Image 1 (cartoon, rainbow, N blue to C red):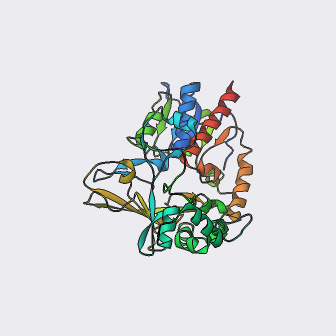
Image 2 (cartoon, rainbow, N blue to C red):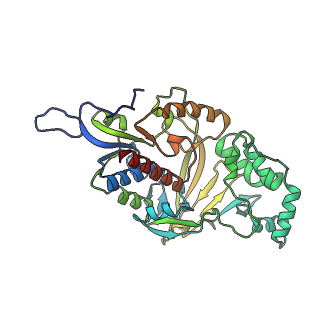
Image 3 (tube, helix red, strand yellow):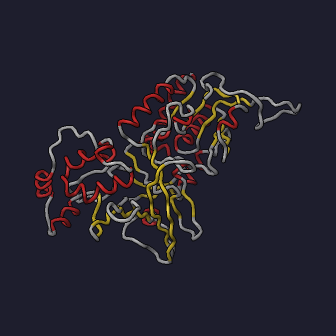
Length: 395
């Protein structure tokens, strides 16, 4: 793939802006931003509003918001088009920043796991333990019992060791092993400890899915949040546009790249492996289908979970839409969802990262560009940090 690290970056025939003479002249902007998800939208908004930069955002999909996009389906139910996006954060800075563009609908995200023909509280907590032993218990008893069940592993090196070192084999096989194998198509012992390490184990009655102090959804929607972020007059958004199709039409000082790192470098070291997803929505003539917004299916069916986002959005309507989520191989025509955290994939990424570090006028921001599973607030924090670097260099 051709070099993009020169300054100004990109020059050629301008199909976006022309002059009266009829001669194509490259349009000068400050930044070309690839992608209109959280990383791209945050940087576009900051660069335009704080530095007065002219920004062109090229988004290959036909909508803004990336995987966080939500919409009303044919039945009028607000759904998350690319799977549930449960916003949460411990960062006051991120919450305050996004709060400029949205109101918040507070939510305590709660899920269940369908195992052995019944609903179980999940993540594992004292309520789960009581259901397992079949009687009232206490945190002290749970701690003592887990100490007997757990497998001593001083420094867990993979996801299997991570979980059995905390709760032992029975709970591992009941809630974790099957789900992880379906989701990643790899044995938990072949995945980094971080995969299952993201899921808390609690010995109290805190049955929330997540632990962050701020848990809420943008109100009325993620899409409205992105519309406001990208509404600055110095931001131009081009939908259904591959950035390579417009890069030669522009002269720009910086490229903000939020796409896949291997694609940027023309797959020089081969493709970075991803897992994809397939969604099967179903609208039902009832107010609610299941007792929680998300029910995991670790050991039954081919899907990993059923999501009924109405529980989280609080939308009032007489029908509901559920979405069955099937893990899938990534390939042609499919979206990249989850970087696969394993030693072999880390080695491929390392080679691409060495190339990326040599690009002096390109910012690689976000999950795909860093081949790492980041939460939404982490992506926003990364983008805000990159803005500060660019601002400092511009002074």
